[in-house]
Image (cartoon, rainbow, N blue to C red; front, side, top):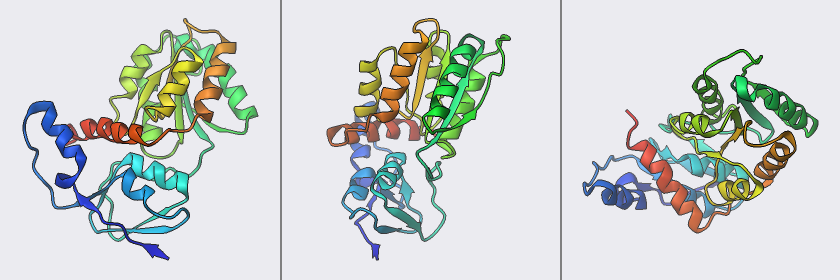
Length: 237
């Protein structure tokens, strides 16, 4: 059965008020409706949702649909910048020369755990530039080819900055299990960055396992994550 929910226009969304508070200006109101995570959560699990023509579907709404088994049926081409994520077993994995050895160790651990790994490089310890590999990982997550992404460099900070430039990516640099839990439960991070110079292989395994197995908390956190995503959309051309 195809379900219907009331879709808001972008101008009616709470995201607008967040934008107004940022710089005091009211952004122009496009006519196309916006489907956010709250709208998807109103639907019964494992149902089909017919999106209104020209809908803008937020990344968080797509993830909520995936988690609840809801199929989004588009009546016309969707203008969102991300494709649906099709499975929860594909991990994009990347590193620069400083993170190469740790990447190889994590790759083996992930494959043993049943994940399909897309190895974005680097493929040796020869010197390379971390933004190239962070971008490759982030792109796979943003376009839906990977469920999550993991990127490793010397400190983890630069790769986090680079990955967060990609629309739809929420990258978090984690250095222990507490930050891994927080980044998933509160921020719904979809890319993890690690500093090979800061943590050893055992701790890296613990962080990655915790991060992959921690569910997003939703609730008040969902509203805040939607606002994070809304900031990124303001700068899209």
